[in-house]
Image 1 (tube, helix red, strand yellow):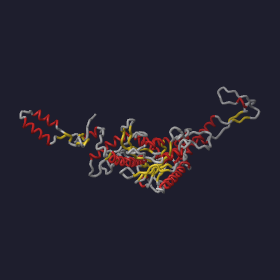
Image 2: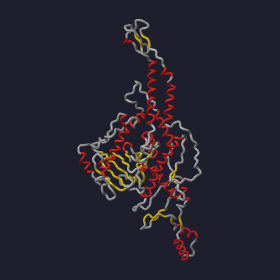
Image 3: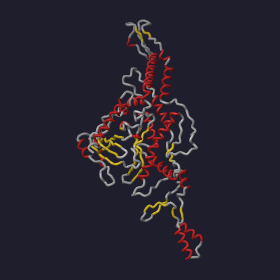
Image 4: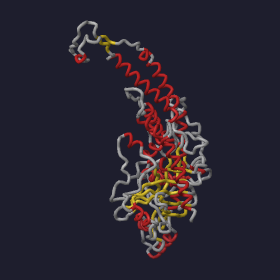
Length: 520
């Protein structure tokens, strides 16, 4: 335990230094964001600052092509698997997919993950089991969640190729101190310890400060980073190191361990997934799509700025004035202007060659083509026919969408792997948490005619007449020979019970049908 905190702080120091380098180096993340938002360098050599937002347009078009339609997966059984179980999983996942709205809908999260991956090289996301309660302490939502992480607050094992083979992964968060104090476990005890040490260390300080970086978007828009400025609600920086066997939360600015627990998830993995389009052998983060084209982008902006300057020079060229032959204060470019001169040739316009204007169109087209080609906007088209349409898949989650270009299709495959990773964790979490010792059943709303028909065909709504009911009917007939067939049938129907019952209360044997089917 004595060696734990120094190890955590050492890893934290290493990856925060790396993040700082990634942000500030030439063509790093700050330059990438500047290119995306069209911010020219401060030492721009031209008076004109005209920006062609080509990078932003290309990335938005790629994002729209990939996620313009609703993305979802299908759960299919492996060989000799149970089709009904796969359908049940699918129904639960569909419900959770629609209910995961913390931080945006799943469609918005996937869209943001795609764009961030193109900008920074990777997008990391936490896969957690979330329980949300209302003011009356009633559960509003209990299920899986996907939380996108800011890559500037993520540290990954540098020896790993990706999150799948990482030994550890650290996530930095900024949380309210009072929220940490309020979190209790199932026994009513505080989850986090050493909070009193942090309060004592803060003293007159409002909150922990963000010292490693300033959000670039706020800088671009002239906004101040006000994180932690609220005196009433102090915030602290905490870091959680996720391992396959345990989770450890600590405060790097106060050098205390706040929590150390065993990994609560049965899947036994680090609960983090990673989306990467361009992997690199020596860097688990991967490669940005924008960084390689920044020089071309600057060349394009320089061409546009110089062209506009040349056009303005043609529209209002410099004037040659013979000294003493004109009143300088009267020389104005405006309608009905009067220039006072002593001789007709006192003022003449400078004539330039205009060669830059002549070759602008050719140069501009070449640069645009080079940028489009470098960013994969001119890749080959592919067929929309799925070669595996008539084959069964052995995977649990399968994408059924094809894109129009080879680059789009490759991105779709990577996105499908990203979705498969967290959906597999979702399935494991559902198996672990939906049924506990306190909860022996789970009521799931089935949406869609297809699911309705499948479950009905499987007989989930069937009822049967137990043998003891038939015996009771026989006894009634023996005691009352004059009973009609209609009355007998009514008695038998009243004794019907679900074929697949779920015991709500084992003591009282209160029974619920395994599935309540309702078209409405």
